[in-house]
Length: 153
Image (cartoon, rainbow, N blue to C red):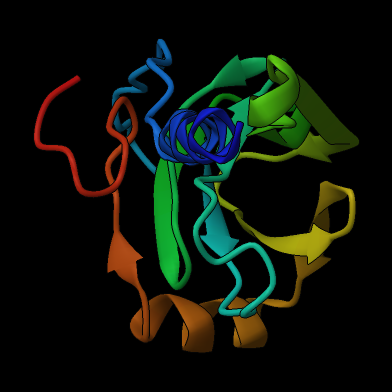
């Protein structure tokens, strides 16, 4: 009976740590005079450090970020839903959680967002330009359409 329990535990751990294949949208860069630049930064918290966070725009995942990584992309002026999604409860079969905020963006402006750990689901919040620039300088760029640590999807 102990062997069955041990096997179940080992299988559960491998399943919990296995990567989830996720389709990511790649967003082409645009002329900054006609578009807004969006920078999404994953915080450096210890909580949730091993979980990849997926920034979203209008519900579409655009990158996969671990701690201290960021992605940057341009959008045309307008209203958008910026969010963060993670895959949770892997041992119980898994489910996606999504938190979003609505923002209106203007051309020739920069917007910074930070993804944080807010148990049981992640959070997304606005950052000032000053905070965003400092965190971006200390982070690692992950292009849209890519998961961190992976050269191609």
